[in-house]
Structures are given as C-alpha cells and as structure tokens.
Length: 247
Image (cartoon, rainbow, N blue to C red; front, side):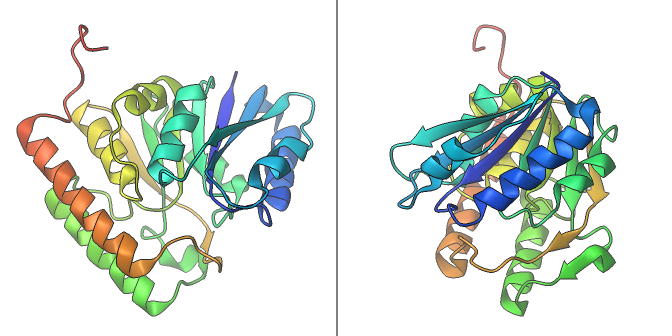
C-alpha cells in the first residue's frame, strides 16, 4: 500500500461526498500514489456520515474504508484510530472539509520521507485564499505562541489539518498517543521531535470553510489544558520513545 489518507469525521454527511470524490479522482490521475486507501473515521456522528462513506465510489487502485466510533471521543481519538488501521508507506492526514486541497500533497511529498511534512498557513500567508474570522485567527496565533514556548519550537503552525507522515512513524505514534481532543497535533509533533524524527513545515494553500466543528471557547480551554499536559510530559520524559519492552 503506497498511501493511506486518514480523514477524521464528525457529522460530515453533507461534505464527504464531494471530498471523497475529489480525493479518489486525484489519486486515479496520479498513479504514483497507488495502490491507496482512504480511511474515514466516523467519530460517533449523529447524522448519516457512516452511510455516506459506505456508499462512496472507490476506483481501481483506491479503496475506501469506514471506521466507526460508537460515541464521540474527539478528533484526536479519530486520528488515532485511522493511523492504527492504516497500511500505507505514507499516511496523509486531511480534514473532511478539504480546507487544504488534496493537490497540495505534491508539495509535502519528499520533504520529510522518514518523518513528517507539516502543511502550514503561517509560512506564506499569501496562500490563504479565504481567511478565518478575526477572533479565531487571534486565538490560533496565541495558541501557536504557547505551543512554541511550552511544547515544540520551530513550527509556526501545528494546527493545519494537512500533514504527511511516514507510515511506520504514524502507526508508532498512534500506539502511544494520549490526547483525544484538538491538541493531538501538538502531541504527535512533540513526540516525533523527541524521537529524533525530521519535521519540515511546508506552505500550503488553505481556505476557511464555514460550519466548523470547533467551539472557540470550550475547545480553546481544552486545548490549553492539553498543552500543559504535553509540556509536563516533555519535562518528565513521558514523550520519549518507548523501550523495546513497552512496544
């Protein structure tokens, strides 16, 4: 399996048909990524997300799989499930709204073949086609400053939902990942850095999409608490690679 595309989904029945069609179409046109699998993790949706995934049309060399959580656990939990079940030499993490289009995988490929290529909105903000509301932009910038101070330096945008991992690294990270909420990106990158993996931040096209699942006040407070947990783990060595006996 050349590529696994992991998409965490919560109440995404309306957006997934076009998203899956676009991803499958791209992979069919770029056979260097095939055979490929698209893994959509339904994190306890209340709508027809799972049914939409099962009805989606696959293609020669591209399969579509649905992983279902009985209840909503959080985006980080959905990513963990998708990474664990992936089989690809590379694993692409993508949001269900395709705020960053699938075509941007070409910019990440080869950037960190044994590590992580992080799609970023901050490296070149001219590539942001539609900006998010001011309050969300400010909150995001404040959070990124806190991330650089407390958890992982040198990355200006940890939260863009478009990242390409070496497959074995993605699965090894998922085996020890603890954060279920939106700060899961920080944990994954902090662990990868602690494990000595190469992390490259690459400018990608990005456009704000309405109907976000993020609740600014509630989720921001949860993310800052999780960031403090990650900082504590970093200081106590809990982010270090597991010993052979623990694997």
